[in-house]
Amino acid sequence: MKEINIETALALVREIRGQSRLSDVQEAVFRGVWNHASYQEIIDAAAEHGYYYSLGHLKNTGSELWQALSEALGERVTKTNLREALTRYQQQHHNTTQQDWGEAVAPTSFYGRIEELATLRQWLDHCRVISILGMGGMGKTSLAVRLAETVLESSSGEASGHSPARFSTFFWRSLINAPPLEEILKDMIQCISNQQEINISTTLEGKLAQILHYLRQNRCLLVLDNLESVLQSGSSAGAYRPGYEDYGLLIQKIGEAEHASCLILTSREKPREVAQ
Image 1 (cartoon, one colour):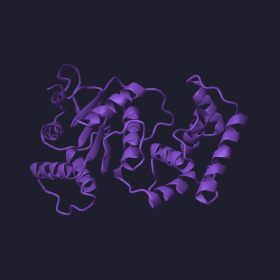
Image 2 (tube, rainbow, N blue to C red; image 1 turned 180 degrees about the horizontal axis):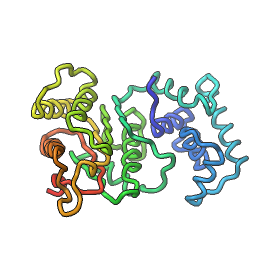
Image 3 (cartoon, one colour; image 1 turned 90 degrees about the vertical axis):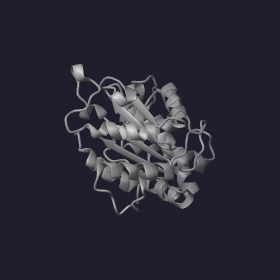
Image 4 (cartoon, one colour; image 1 turned 180 degrees about the vertical axis):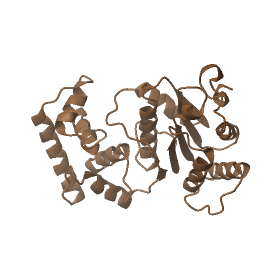
């Protein structure tokens, strides 16, 4: 059984309880428990951002939340089976989006960045390539993960305050270990074809043509994280390392072709295709 992401899970809890939103303390407890944090770890993480809760208050909030979900779902819901219970509910009541998260790691906590998320959601409506640029440690990956979770929540059928573009397919790959483009393209074609493409082209041009075909056929959200791993630095910033130049062709093709899909890049360096 494929687990849902945290934003979809929160949307399901609001739906099940008939609430437009959870209280701050309810959401803090839910997010912490979902990410396997102890109540003390939830308290410490919240305090770093100016939210102060007592241990007793968190335990009572959690107990009340699990009890309410148990009554609504007709089964006993606890901290240990929360993911399974909500995943079952989602599969029974909602159509799911085809998702391949690859090596993406969900942040244990995420605060702020409301304006950036709102801007990115708007760009998704009309941009074919989006780059999230910044120095290392600035939270580019966490921002991209949170954006994807929010968008996929909407695509799974739960309305939110903002109604971002709906996507039928999601694909994420980290380039931190500089994988060859051939490997990325094969995985991408399998994902965006919903595992239906059995005759993957043996040429780069053929694979790119297949990708563009499925990007037109389905609305896909693609993320390539840590693009700087295949880029040169210094005086040649924005150029590709030897043997990785075809990544630029992939970005160029996706950016120039007519389709409603979107490619998100995170990088410390701006690739030349984006600069152009």
